[in-house]
Length: 175
Image 1 (tube, rainbow, N blue to C red):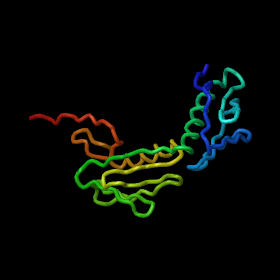
Image 2 (image 1 turned 45 degrees about the vertical axis):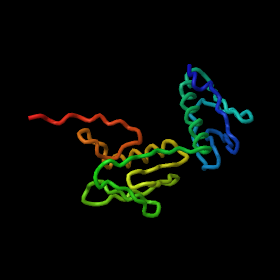
Image 3 (image 1 turned 60 degrees about the horizontal axis):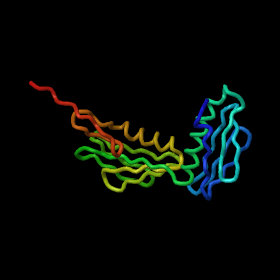
Image 4 (image 1 turned 30 degrees about the vertical axis):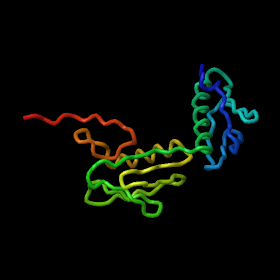
């Protein structure tokens, strides 16, 4: 039995949740997100509280996942999500060109990364990149794509890393 699904989701002020058949739409100040419910999962809205239920014990496992996704959507449209990346290395820089991100990561050419729909990319300094948006999954995916251009290497720690990420530095070969 899923204990996660039994926990109610609190709807903050300014956020409304609509259920239309198998689709749930959450609308708030940061945007609108929608989600297709798994078969056998029901959503009940009681004022400013949302409860999930399943039709039988077999579909209860999907109710916990659906509850977690809906809770992330509610938080995303009310507060939003953000991910911070740090560029570590000599000459590694990030700059904005309109909505696109121009990265200099030690290659012979600059990398131009186009911001996906619903994602805001900012560069407060030359070595920091902030990715913000309402959809938690898309914010994380965008951060992972940017990090994949030059992941941190284990000998000097150079590359694009998440803020606060601890890189274990390997010892070099000894003669």
